[in-house]
Length: 323
Image (tube, rainbow, N blue to C red):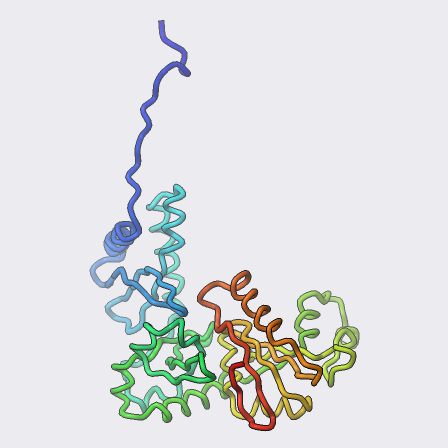
């Protein structure tokens, strides 16, 4: 007589879970096989902003001079949670084929005169990126920030590649020449945007049916009155890597002069900074610093953090300094 199924002891099937590197090498091998001999597929480690380390697949076709890097860290988490590796491979192939149709054509000419109009800059944290900064030309500013330089290859999300020391040396220029060209290009391609915080919040909640007059009545875009309009958001016109706008010539000075006040500058993220008018009533610096740190710890992804510091612009000295 057969025993009921629930009395039958079933041996648990143990599945060998690959570690991160073995998982990546397996993807490298299988995707290389799927794409064929005309493609170079390599597993690489990438240091991102603030020391974030990611593992990615570099995929390049023999007849192309650009290649996407598809990061696999999230795919590995899905794999550990039980997702089939073959479905991950199909997903990565689809991502690659979609991205490949949008990649810009770049000439195989990396001479300074050929790419100088495409050089742009970004702001990063100096202390959190010391390892990365060893390999790239940079300028330290405002005490704990650094400017890095990139070559623009597409406008969608500011697609670019970072200039390393080897490429910079081939330009045969000094760092100030690189900085001046990059700053001019930033201001030309990505002009600054200053918006009242009330406008920013209102634009997030305003109904589509609201007409322009009703919308305008919800916020004050002129001088502050009874606390309204004291906070502004500075970014660029697309809101990506917009913290660089605090470097734009005379932007901070002209805004401070217009408002008739010195400014506290709070690094909201890599993408924008907050301008707080110093109304002369003794703004609590510790509270501002605590606010910045809370946002960095609780809201932002690690690689979006710019700084834990607060800065001040003084009209008397026309300087931005960390406080």
